[in-house]
Every structure is written in structure tokens, then in C-alpha cells.
Image (cartoon, rainbow, N blue to C red):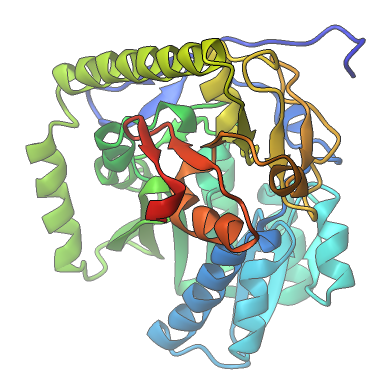
Length: 380
């Protein structure tokens, strides 16, 4: 696609004073963002695969699920999460719009290749029956037509069934200066306050919430089918924390904006100094968030010659949107031993540094966010 015109879209983060959630103000068509050849796979990231298996097994235990219970994962990707539920002995079904569904089916994880809507939910219910749990991890923030999705989930759940949504958490995004998590897949970044206001409009009760450290800080919200269900004390506790942090105040977001600008100046200053000193610096990993970071910072292939990805990545031999930095096999890092490696999947910084060092990498590491820092190889 290098010789074709490249589409660009506005990327503006808007904050709602009433519900405290944020969203971008321009939606790119889902069929364009999640095209059939979409290259992301959850199963190739070891830490994520382990996390999803333990999450699945813990939910089987939490809800006392048995072989009669059906668990549906919406946006199931290559079936990594459902693999954990299968291990836990429950019935499983995935919904995935991209060709990654074919990988899941080939691995024995029953997956329907489709976008999820009311029509799809009715078809699933007719063929597979009602679900005890519907889960979506890092997907609910991507939905354009929320009403369609929630009504579809409500139709598919049995009475008292639970919709579990795990996504980036607004408080952690703002606290950590994580502007790179704002991109066109992530239409919204939720606070607990905003999710309660959302589900209040439908026949659901937000009954529980948990925080985690995925994606640089995540929130897992449990919405039970039906009104006036018993609510965990954790919900009230987190609502209080959001209020104290200032998610309902404009100043909180102004401060966030200023911090983002400072991080850019520090990173670019270091990059130019490194180049002037004739030292080599390259990137490692090409998560979607790196597109926001590198395009906003203004980093092209003259400043960062390549981005290194795992040998199993579907992104190899492709290019970063906008800046066209080539994506190469990370064996090149070991072969070339650059002076510095920028960790663009900085939310996995520690395990990535340990793995690369174990493979013989002697480079020092740059962690761009939450605040710019250098980690010497000897300190890993």
C-alpha cells in the first residue's frame, strides 16, 4: 500500500462533564478498522495468553460454571481466552469479525466470523441456547453502536446472566499520561461512573468491579441482567476514588494534556541528541498504540529505522501507518546490537527487557511512557 493514497482521520479526545467518560469525536467505519486481514493476535504474547487463561479459570470458579453453562467471547480473536474456559470444562463460543476467526476454528475453538449485533445474537440463541456469561476483553470500547450491542447481549444472556467487560481504565490512562491508548479502535475510554450511567439505561445492574494492570491499567466491570441486583462494596469504593481523583473536573484533563506535551519534548530531545552523537536507536514492538505515539511525536524512519516484532507476528514486512517505518523480525536486534531500543509496548516493558536480554541483547532500553526514562541493560 506504500504507493497508494493514505487515508487519515481526525483524532480528538472529548471529555463528558456529565458521565466523566471520554471518547473520540470521529468514528471510522468498523469494516475498515477491523478488515478481514486485521493483523493482531492475542495468543502470541506470552504474558497475555497466561493472563487470559488464569482469568478464564478464575471466572469458572467465581460463577460455579459447569459443562451445561455457555460462555461467549465477543471479539474473541484467536480464541486464547476461550481456550482457558474450555480447559475449565464449560461450553464455549467465539464471535470474531476478522480472518483471525479461521485460526481459532483451526485450533478447535468454535468461532463465528461476524460482527456482533441483535441479528447475530438471535441466531446464536436459536442454535446454541442462552449464555451464562458474555465476555468482551479490550473490545467494548471499540463498539460504535452500543445500544445494539447491549440489547444483543441482553437477549442472549439467561436471567441473572452476567456481561463482563474488561477494558482500559480512564483513571489509569489519565494518571499514567497514556495518550497513546487514544486511537481509532478505541472509540471510548470508560470510567466506572460512565459505565453505570450507560447500563442504567438498559435492563442491567453493575454489580461488581475489579481493577488490574493490563494495558497499563484496566477495569473489569460485571453487569448482571436485571434491575436492582445486589451490588458489591467495591463499586461504591471505586466511585469515591474517581471523584477524589478528579475525573469530573476539567483541570484534571488540562493537566493530562500538558504532561503529554512534556513527554513529547523529552523524547524528541533525546532522539535528536542520540542521532547527533551518531549512536543507533531503533524501536521494538508495533502495537496499535505506537501509531498514535510515533505520529504525534513526529518520528519517521530517519529517526527510528525500524520496529522489531516477534517472529510469529502478522505485522512483519508491513509498515507503520503514517510514518511508514518498516516492521522487521526482532532477531535483527540481536544481530545488530543497537545502542538503544525504544519499547513501544512499554506496558510490557519488564518481561520484554528480560526476554531480549536473555537472547543476548546488550542494548539499553528507552521507556517512553508514563514518563520518559532510560533503563540500562545492566539494571535489567
